[in-house]
Amino acid sequence: MAIRAIEGEGEEAEARPAVFEFFAGGGLAGIGLERAGFRTVFANDIDAAKARSFRANHPDIAMHQGDVWDLTAADLPGAPALCWASSPCQDVSLAGARGGLQAKRSGAFWGFWRLVEGLAAEGRAPPIVVIENVAGLLSSAGGADFAAVCTVMAQAGYRVGALEIDAGLWLPQSRPRLFIIAMKGLEAPETPAPGGPFHSSRLVASHAGLPEATKAAWAWWSLTPPPRRNLDLSSLLIPDVEADWLDDAQTEALLSLTAPLHRARLDAALVSGERRVAAAFRRVRVENGVKIQRLEVRLDGLAGCLRTPSGGSSRQYVMVMQDGRLRARRLTGREAARLMGLDETYVLPSSESAALKLMGDAVAVPVVQALGEQLFAPALRGRTKTAA
Ligand SMILES: C[S@@+](CC[C@H](N)C(=O)[O-])C[C@H]1O[C@@H](n2cnc3c(N)ncnc32)[C@H](O)[C@@H]1O
Image (cartoon, rainbow, N blue to C red; front, top):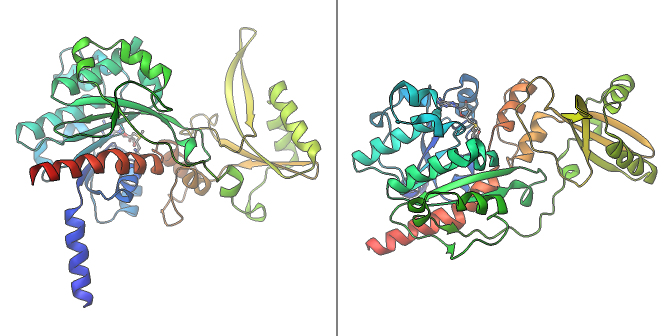
């Protein structure tokens, strides 16, 4: 009986559409896709620490640590249903003639795309390709980077569309990201014209600047937003008694960076006496022509976008105000993982800074899950029906 159950599970796993996860980091794209019924069968990342975290959480998945440029199609197992690439895309338009050293220098995206072409040459082209990036890709190089990515996909016979999605609709973290989604030979839900929260005005403007042939391959993929989020930042925090609070001098030093408007918000929250939680982060701002470090706070129940710590400026703080007292501390790696939609079983690196780097680079799990459930899985199911 037990054996049959295990066999059944194995067959069921085999039946799930296969994913190659490039620029995989800690594997959060794969976790979101797994929740939507997919399975990652191959992953790649250049960073040794990220690869260690990936393996700690996915011991059964083949993780290749190394430069994407060092891979060839022969290293990739079978025919994937979906290739996911959270690829650094800035500067992709500098590639010019794609190939050789010039392309290699121009960014990892072409290293990834070369593999998609290699798979296609062997009849193993993925019917779905997803590129995840910061929304800045829409405007980098005056829009040429975005156009380069969309155009190469359109030229390869894909229908291409993009969504700008803020994870804050699902999780208490403001995290806008761009998802470029290409599909070949599949039909997925789409709208005839842009509309709704994910076809942002800057996306619509960038689409308008695409070459006509790329626009002809365009699709406004349709995604339904989730029900109203009922979690806020305070509900994801570790208990106050377990937290490592800054001492009074450190708290004062931090508060001294607060911009006047933000200070006024904190003061108002303090006066109320009620428990209020704020997220705070340091930013370099230009005031009167001078660069100045400022502490910016938000009291809307959301954390600011998690970033990779660099020079200490992007580390996020938690402030708790209660009974007229303000205490501050750093956001922990576990809290960051919760803000990305991970559950407590996710294994984080033991160093806090490594955990925060891993999470700051990652993709929010419920956003990927929603894409998988609403777009990718229905598209693939439609293909199976057509084939039958
Ligand atoms: C934005 S992060 C993606 C994180 C991932 N989606 C996650 O959820 O954890 C980009 C990743 O690309 C990796 N990377 C950058 N250049 C690379 C290259 N040339 N080859 C392979 N991986 C690369 C980085 O190490 C980093 O983990």
